[in-house]
Image (cartoon, rainbow, N blue to C red; front, side):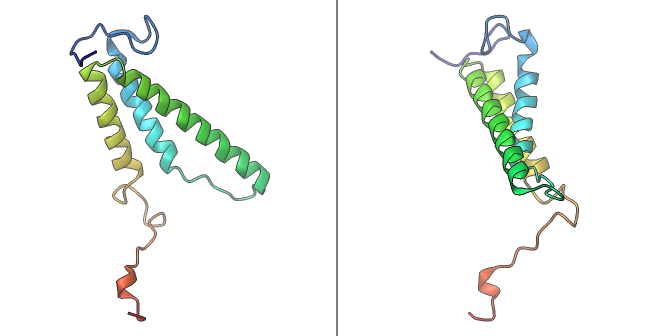
Length: 117
């Protein structure tokens, strides 16, 4: 097996998604990052319901991540690039401070700035 460039690669299943499969892999990668960094509101939810919601979100995230991994295992360079760019773009949008509201950004305090040091 070797990486190749083309639009005829079979992604996960025979005949699945066709030539624009890189777009679906990109969106799936962004979805994985969004779920990884999503903050689920816990207002009015008891511990059992919150645990169930977290479990469902984790299951969907892991399932989507495995689908991206299987797509990359098609050894198509375009699919690999779509997955990497999708994860990077998703992290940029959802994992960094740049696109969050001021209320969502927690102030980071450097431990070396502590008066105890």
